[in-house]
Image 1 (cartoon, rainbow, N blue to C red):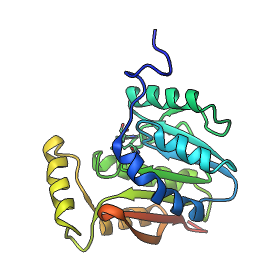
Image 2 (cartoon, rainbow, N blue to C red; image 1 turned 60 degrees about the vertical axis):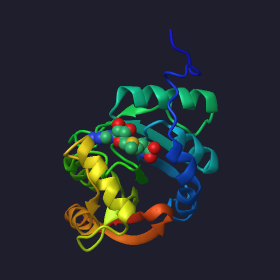
Image 3 (cartoon, helix red, strand yellow; image 1 turned 90 degrees about the vertical axis):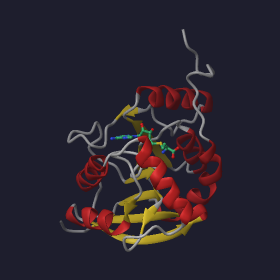
Length: 208
Ligand SMILES: C[S@@+](CC[C@H](N)C(=O)[O-])C[C@H]1O[C@@H](n2cnc3c(N)ncnc32)[C@H](O)[C@@H]1O
């Protein structure tokens, strides 16, 4: 039997402790005043706990497609006892069918470069389906701009990702923006973040 505090269930990621505060600063500003935030690729579940605690006026819906991640999210959630943190759902961004039909905002942190391109295609299609007009899609991660890496560390990171899986890799901001556009999502904000990462805020067009 496993329990919520089982170290094999409860995953942790060192990057979460580094990026959660700067990300929260942006989320405070760009997320709606009420409603459900759908988090895609929640990973360990640490972001979900941190953001749900800091944003008690929102309901936070964590998801992932990976079984180990889902167990970890559930364990972190159980320990937190947060009433606005919903039970995790299985969601593969690449799938056409999502278990959620409506979300007031979507957050996806460090997924676009650590998954095949079809996951980003599915993410944009899904955001186009479930967000209301004006609803925001928040992305965080490393991106190339104008076809080039923005820092040597991002280039090394890209090479490392592609070695681990040839379908992964740091994406071109322009390609992501064009893809978003095809699903009625317009890039509203590009915010430089620590360690050569970007925050991107897309907004669903009013009429699409
Ligand atoms: C690097 S981790 C990031 C996790 C977390 N967002 C964070 O920043 O710590 C990438 C996550 O993407 C998830 N993922 C990969 N492909 C996915 C897909 N097609 N749909 C949903 N999640 C996916 C993985 O299971 C993993 O949890």
